Image (cartoon, rainbow, N blue to C red; front, side, top):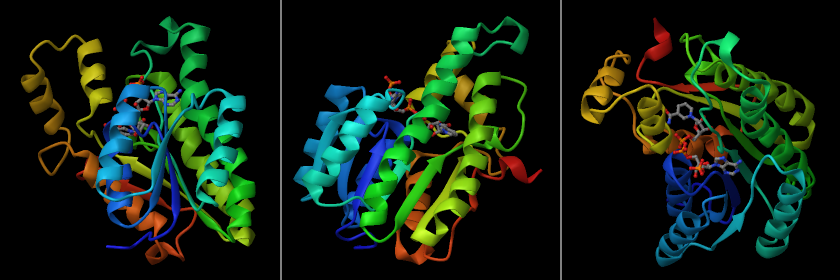
Length: 257
Ligand code: NAP
């Protein structure tokens, strides 16, 4: 309880999956929650759920790949809540699953636009507000695919590798401002993204596909959104006040081999 009490937390891609779990857990810990997403209905529904728990919350339609939308929404959050303390750069897409030589430039660019440029735009436009608050925490969702290759989704691997190193470099740039920047590296987490990824790979029996993914993790199963949300709560809180430039791997042992 109260691990982020009174802190304004922005969660991009917050309407579903991991972002949704982050919103719920940060609200339970006393945070004010700004949800950015392009899924307006799901985002609005989540905010109603958060408000019913007693949280201060609001939804903004923001495509993180659109700098003007990001800049306007960041300023609006600061006006609405009075400050910004935590930014969770969670919005992301899996993109096409083809070998590198079959990928078009447009397919490559779309994944980089959301997964890399989105993190850049949101970080860029949050900095003034985090400085104004006297510091803060930026938490970037990378992946196990930002640490090791799996032999699939090439643009996604490139993007998540970039996010890992952007996090470390920004940690150095903004340490003097008391802005901490860390990355989180989930293993497979059961969300709409993973369901879509399995379907795109030809899976029809989702239970069988899920069991196959379970076996990729030494703990014997994939994760759930809350497994990541608790890591986000930790990095957002004062418990992590000496933690910056680090990579928090939450993957059931996937990269331990
Ligand atoms: P998800 O279930 O697809 O949820 C992501 C949310 O972000 C969706 O609401 C999505 O809307 C939204 N979004 C997509 N593009 C956006 C944009 N341009 N601007 C704003 N919002 C946008 O994904 P997830 O599985 O929770 O993943 C969250 C993050 O964790 C991603 O960065 C992902 O790469 C990372 N991650 C996930 C896993 C996993 O196994 N699930 C593992 C490692 C890392 P749409 O539904 O319309 O796209």
